Amino acid sequence: MDPVDAGIFEAWLSSTDDGVVAVDAEERVVLHNPAASRVTGLSPAAARHRPWREVLRLDRSVADLLWS
View 1 (cartoon, rainbow, N blue to C red):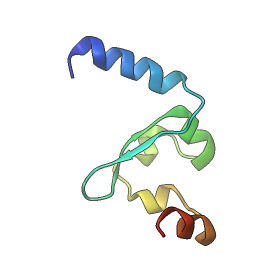
View 2: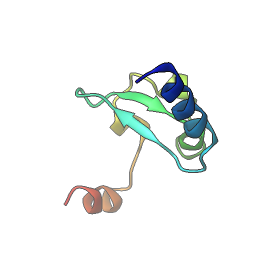
View 3: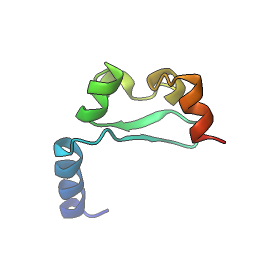
């Protein structure tokens, strides 16, 4: 991603009202925006590198819907 695209992406990510969490191949959080912080209660820095299941504590019924 070139610097201009990265800047636009960062601006969108920090201004959207949608929570965005991205994970790597090891299922660890690599990206967590401010809107996601309002849902998880963790700052982006606190969420980074933690297992997503630890950051997004989903109700079992919600998890079943997502992965069924």
